[in-house]
Amino acid sequence: MRGPVPVEPIVLSPGAVPVWVVLPVVLGFFVVLMGGILVVVCLVTAARGWMTYGVRHRGPPEPPPGMTTRSGQSMMIGSDIAPANYRHVITAGFGEAGIYLRTGSIFRLFHPPLLVPWTAVSKVEQKPAIKGVYTVVECEGLARLVFFGALGDGLLAHWRARVAS
Picture 1 (cartoon, one colour):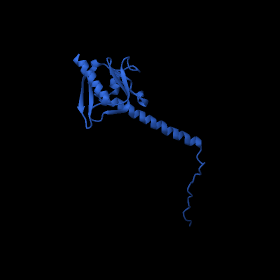
Picture 2 (cartoon, one colour):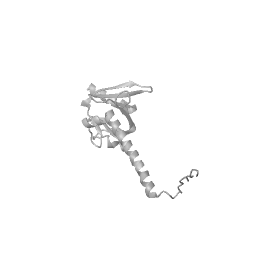
Picture 3 (tube, one colour):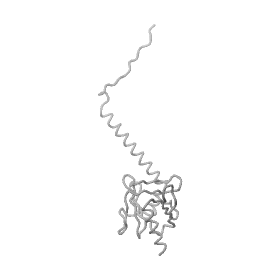
């Protein structure tokens, strides 16, 4: 009787896998990863309200004349529970035409620029936060917009001046 036949492990030498096999696998991984990130961005945009604003209040690629904007702003859109948070990627401004919002970088693919006219705004108010206050803009039938800092303060002052006149 014979005993079991020993099996030799397969050991690849450093040059055993050709580059033409490794390169497509690595590139494919990054393509799938970027595709997944874009799908997540698209789903969050649809679920939290930016796309709804985009359908109703699509704005021009650049702010209207006479509107002062600030880049690198932060804002949120959506309800109190799990709103979409846009930290330091928003170019925002306000003027006589309304509230202008535009995202930067890769977010532009699913985030058209917005120009929300003042006639669509039903209420602007400040609410207390753990540190300071935040400004809430409510529009009829749309998710709320939340702004922070000087942008929110300026927006509230502009709203109050419009309501007073």
